[in-house]
Amino acid sequence: MRKTDFIKMGLKNLARRKLRTSLTVMGVVIGTFSIVVMVSLGIAMTEGYKEQISQMGDLTTITVNKYYYNADTGISDTKELDDNLIMDISKIPHVQCVTPVQYLSINLISGKYESWSQLCGIDPNAFKYFEFPEIEEGRYLEPDDTDGMLISAHSTYFYNPNSNSYRNNEDAVDMMNDRVKFTINANYGEDVMPKYYTFKPVGKMVESNGDKNGYLYVNIEQLQKWKKELKKSGATTYDDDGYSSIWVSVEDMKYVEEVQEQIKAMGYGTYSLADMVGEMQKTSNTLQLILGGIGAISLLVSAIGIANTMVMSIYERTKEIGVMKVLGCLISDIRKLFLFEASMIGFFGGAIGVGLSYFVSFIMNKYSGQIGSVLGIGMAGSKISVIPVWLAVLAMGFAMLVGIMSGYFPAKRATKIKALEAIRESN
Image 1 (cartoon, one colour):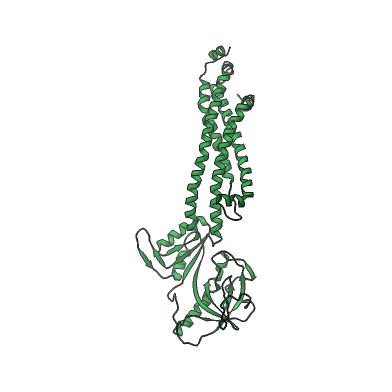
Image 2 (cartoon, rainbow, N blue to C red; image 1 turned 90 degrees about the vertical axis):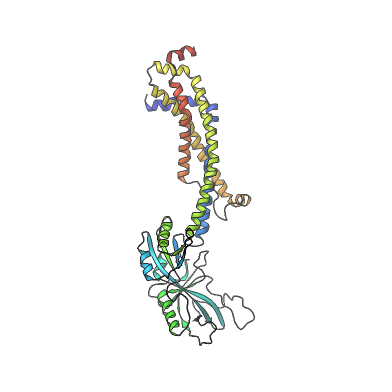
């Protein structure tokens, strides 16, 4: 029997019993719809977590610090961060950039206004690899900017020390255009004549939700020169024997955990926002399994309906089966015909169920604000249902598989019917 004959006969037999076929397909539709929508809620929650965390900083950045603690062994240690470590980390696969980081507290002065702030010294080449806020005015730091300074949001808090109010005067000083100098806050409690430094503002970054706000960025080589001058003057500074921390940029988030483990093996502590994503991912995966399992139960229940439909079809088509055998049809062809009909019920039910899922997902996302506030899920501007292509394909494949498995035993039973007895009983 040709494949086209299978298709014609199978579809014709399904169409002959429209009501029964429709009800059986409807059961598959409900099951497929339940799986897709349930799992899509879990996927949307994961995407929402990632979006929320990514606003806090770069998911591909690892921060290395000198304090190490192993929760399994209880061993703790402190090791200095130096250039040798930077070279070792840069050799780790999938690491694309490593920059030392050093901080220094300063006091900004412009006319009658002052502001306490913090310098952050990094390698200017790092701006290409780490996620910094966009430039509002000017540009990022470059290697030639020995006395350059990049200004971030919330990095200054200017006030008039001679007034009774210490509230922030946001418009009092324009860091990009006004004359500003600073002293380094190192001689705590000592009556020492302060040394004033000047700088060249090269750019200003926009305000963002990330972790790069609140600092005045300078070339780390220049910051180290200032610290050496302070040491010569007898002042006490932090991190005299190493860097404050080290930032590591990884090619992709999927390699972050692998790189972190290699750095920890060197005896250093690490932190990344990907750690938070990993914990949330575990919770989300568990939730997806639970929701998907609830939906799968509906689809498995529909399998009983498919099996019942195919068994009833065999009883009604006993004569047809007998005639097919008399005409010389192979037993395998008869089996394939019934399996094809069962798989078509699964296919149509799966296709309609997936289509309905996309429609309901669209409605849910369109009114996500109202639905999210009622259900207590999602966040402003985020989707509460996400259906990736793989989920739609997997759901349709699972629906067809359920149909084939449900039709296997009825199809096997059909092949055991004896031709002459089938014709005699039907008469």
